[in-house]
Length: 302
Image 1 (tube, rainbow, N blue to C red):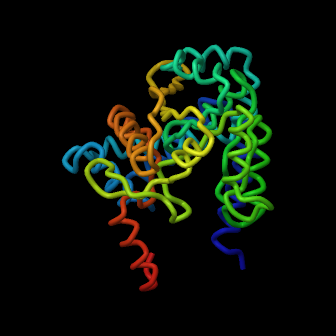
Image 2 (cartoon, rainbow, N blue to C red):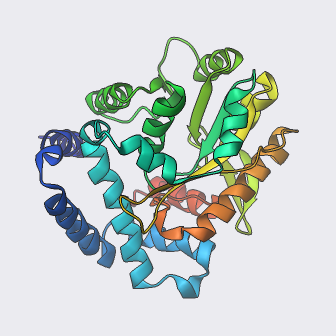
């Protein structure tokens, strides 16, 4: 018998093998069809609606918004499965640079003698942002959650390393990831971290769209201990062709951990209000939802 993890891993690995060979219009059609089907009442839709309700208000979570959200999510995966091919396109860097908002802000940080931390949400295509950064400034360091089974985690790491990313495992490494990230920043390098979720249960509580939410403390702690520049970054899909956008915030003031993380959360709020459909958050984000899921799991429910 195959476990759910084995079946999921096989699906992802098949995606990397097959999707890059499909004609782009056909791939888009297939992934949009899947998105539309899932958006009707697929797994994770209740949580997606609850998350979006915090951003836009319960009365504004329409079927159309959910459909757009799933199309954005599936576009991310379509592009992920094709990205090793896309990155070879000769005009890609120019296209990505044209979609960058806040170029002067990131340029100033990259030109300084300090490291730079970019805190992102799970929005748009954050891997494409990484491809841009590699081409713009060189390799950077990031952290990957150790998903199961191990062969799927290894495939994700191999995929991102092939794009020029330096990948550190969140758990199970020879050295704690925090120490490795500090070393990179102290050497003046760039660290990119997906930051709105608290994967380690050691985050700090912030107010996020008016409700308590634990967010990762890593960006604030790293900035405190290394003196690195700190920016929030948002990736999104816009209406242009090919439609990749990135916004870099003003430098975030670094004080104590909670206050600094709260400033990151406020920057994220502004980003997500602008493009709520591009936030790919199908997991519990706010503390009340996280606790509800823990209770269901204890009771043997999904």
